[in-house]
Image (tube, rainbow, N blue to C red; front, side, top):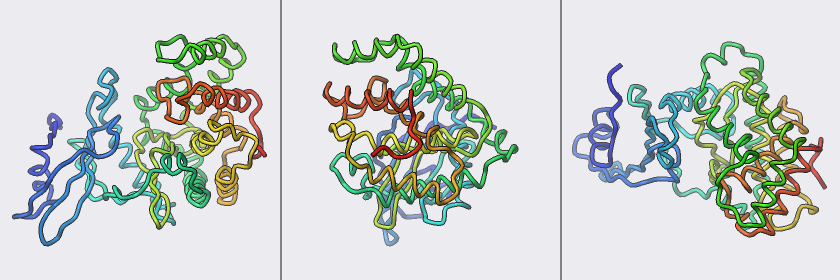
Length: 341
């Protein structure tokens, strides 16, 4: 295989024409799309009689927004592989349509869903996302149940670079001394958590379980920012971390993001309809993950989003952060078997 082309806004239209995605005489404009944290992502708008748009992703050796981190560009191939393998379980259209894959250049072309609201934005404004959460959880359950025990998948999804990089940020870095920019009050709380031997041991054990190459096909990053809400239902994006592992990690990540806004607002004791919808739909669809395992992962994800490198706007204030951390520690040490009421 030759060297990977490093595409730019200027060269992308010509490359797409060579791939047959632009016809002779069609003109294209290129613009940034999404956050672009991991990959180079562009929206291409085509003018002409057949006006249309699509999204192009290219994986490069360094992460796009964090060039100090390096990971194999093969992550895009694992994403494409996940979309292909998981689609057979996608009765509700949760996955985006793939328009083209240029494997040598680690380039993926997807349908454009730019008009849809992200789930994290919907949660932030207090929208009811219970139906979307249930649909998404049922999809995950079908993928997990349908791929559980398939030993051949572990080799097809040996996505070790991204799995380890993501795992370090979820499980390890928040509970080790670091230079994350925290307020004095939150920094003191983080230091106390890092000194909690029981908590650290539980997180380390969960990390080892996450790394074990057995279980089922896992998306690996079911955060609310990777879910778009269309009128027809949710769409799950960004499967760059896909691997074979513990299905409870997918469910736990989803539960954490569904709960986080309410926890940050001090509503831990109130009902969580989206959590109940997600867990109920997952079970009804035959998902193999146990709720207690998922809630422990959820607690770790809450901790990461509060004192880790990937903090979210909902915890900008110390009061909100401390409220979320209280639930995070409870779920890690005493994970519930049902949705807390």
